[in-house]
Picture 1 (spheres, helix red, strand yellow):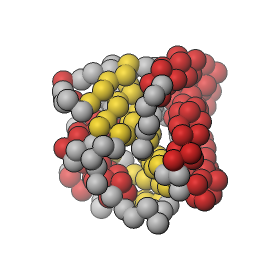
Picture 2 (cartoon, helix red, strand yellow; picture 1 turned 90 degrees about the horizontal axis):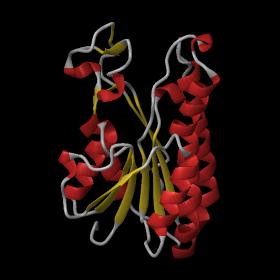
Picture 3 (tube, helix red, strand yellow; picture 1 turned 90 degrees about the vertical axis):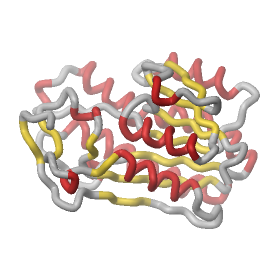
Picture 4 (cartoon, helix red, strand yellow; picture 1 turned 180 degrees about the horizontal axis):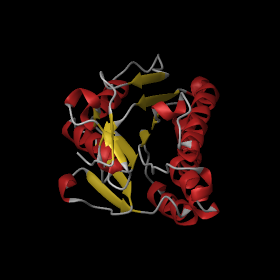
Length: 237
């Protein structure tokens, strides 16, 4: 099923993106990874292409994407890149707000705009977005992050309606707290026990299930939560 298929993944050098890229490579997919770091040691594979690009720089993203798509078809796009901004709104500058919107939401729109014409022409394609539980319910100190994830969810749901008749499947995964480097620069993290966080491999396995699902259905939205929710404040455990 994976033979010959090319998947583009944003945020491929870390966390969910890295786990997903690794799993899809194991399954025989060709993977193109977008990230600021480009190539990472964990993804040394003949079927992996690293593309160093900063999703916060939309002009650079558009240019690199145009180069990438020259004479090449992409069968699926997985948007797993994201940045966390948590705190009272007045703590953040306008530039920080705009950066969060670009990385979490606008970059996905730009990439999809580039991919959709060819997908429509071929009458097939998959778009999979990694959302968040913050797209489902507002959280304290999460105004900026929630805004970006609510926006991403709205974008996905509308895009799913727009693309259905063109053979393009649009899916959204909303994980709860995921044990990943996402929390490295934050003042809180999931609790230390395994049941306190979603594993990056759990999300990657769901992506694979969607990739292998029938072309005649759409897995619209999956909400994924730790069995026992627990937050450690001021801890990186």
